[in-house]
Image 1 (tube, rainbow, N blue to C red):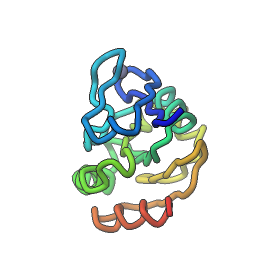
Image 2: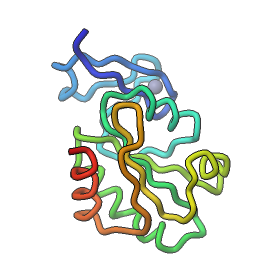
Image 3: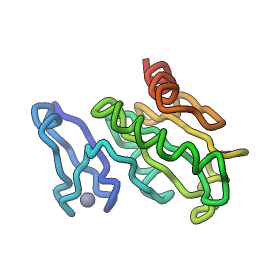
Length: 144
Ligand code: ZN
């Protein structure tokens, strides 16, 4: 069956979107949230694991915390990269202060750390803040 599986980053429902509808602003069949918003979504550990495991579109996670200055500096750069990457990958962020078990689960040693998932596994990891153009380049290289 053609199409792509996309986990709703709002409610966690796994949606299957026909290929021809991917470019037409697909929405979650359960809660109506946009699945490809081009914006950075905040996720918890359960949603992250579900999306990383199931999604047919690459997922890039920014592990961050509010007390981390470089993380806050990178936030607008990451948001810019999310828009630039559009339908190529979805960008999400996970607050390691709110979800400390996620940092342990993924072995995050320092923040900000970005991890790129595709095809059900982690493909690349990058520590330290980057400007948006470098984030976009890193994501494309990681998924090539
Ligand atoms: Zn939903």
